[in-house]
Image (cartoon, rainbow, N blue to C red; front, side):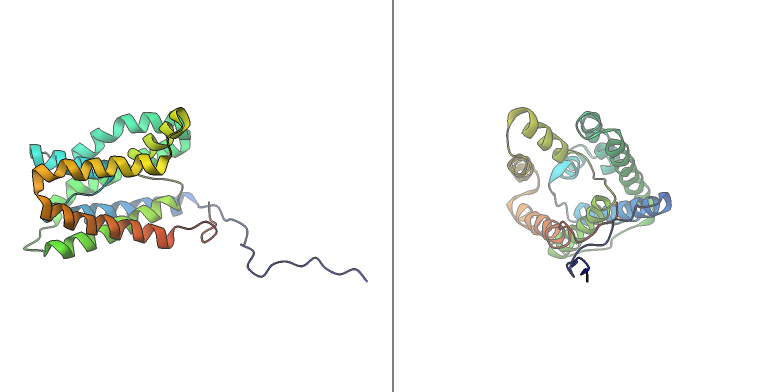
Length: 211
């Protein structure tokens, strides 16, 4: 008698492809969450890592709305992402960046804070942006920016992408010292921690198999 081949109980199910509707709803949801998280950062004049953090610094310094700055800063990274990660990923990422920029701009008309405690703004903003990024990652997308540059430098120069990303984020926080002060930078670190813990806990290989 021939025995059936054993299958591990924890074997992941076959990947299910996201539909266009799935992606559209996910991109819109992620953009709203990220824009709302950025609004908390703006209210408390906090910063964060990545091109979002750089855009916040420029916005504070020049008085230009975050959405416009974020879109412009990401343009060169969009081109690099196209060459490095392919047209599909670049187009998805470009669309996500455009959505976040547009919602951030429109949100100024729809949302107003009377007051928010800075530590709460850091924690809530970090969690919201982290969940938004998690949604994008699960739909083969990101917000472009420094992670694309880090991957490119790893390929061309052999520099480890994680260290490059960390160095760029640290540079943004150091630049912010002269603009927002040491106390605000410490609170910003709380937001960055909340964001990255959200990703670290929830974004693990094998936990989500849709494509």
